[in-house]
Length: 282
Image (cartoon, rainbow, N blue to C red; front, side, top):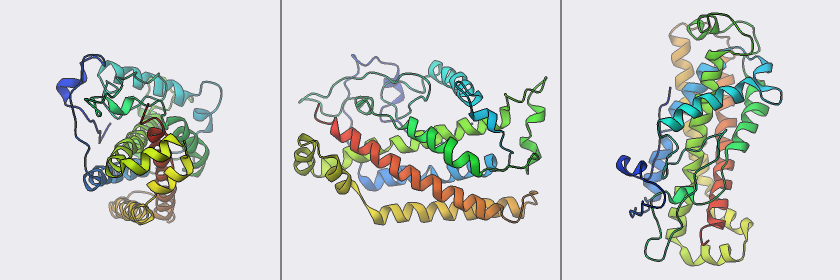
């Protein structure tokens, strides 16, 4: 299940190797980028609602190679075969190395795959947040609130370490969060393009703190959180209105989870922007 994807190259270019693709792509305006980011809110919150309706089994997230990691690896191997992480996309795997890319030149400052050029990926921060913060706040009951998502119908032989229903939603949510966070690379490029003199000075000075302050937009952050809260209210209301067997605290739980998720997304996205800009002149 996958709701939204963002790419900066045409489909016909995705299969071209890094050394062959040199098409020029203009930088989108910030208003356009914000419209793109807004498209992630409902899918993320919708997946949160579904995941929070299933019980949590801690063993899925524990150990050296937890079941979540193995399940992610299998899904990402399939994604690689289908071109999900091809040169020029804004999707990055959690379990495989990212793709090397061309360097920008004076003739073409924004080549296809520009967002694979920098080396920073926010996925380790995302999965740490997911396991350490979100998972502990999920349904601790042994009974799913929404029986259609029950794992009991997913396996011929039940395996407590292979809960396909829960893991499928975990992976879908992580992929959505990752794709949304890495749109920050487009945000950073757009802001750099809008004020190259100031950003170039800070980049050359390796002044990450000042870059972070220049990138900050508290008004926009508040808007993102408000929209996420609205989505949480509307989607949880839909479940309650449809007669789903959820506790009276379900909506409050979803709203809290949505706020934590998008607050963390803002912070990780900002860090992705900062790290992208620090490598922007290389």
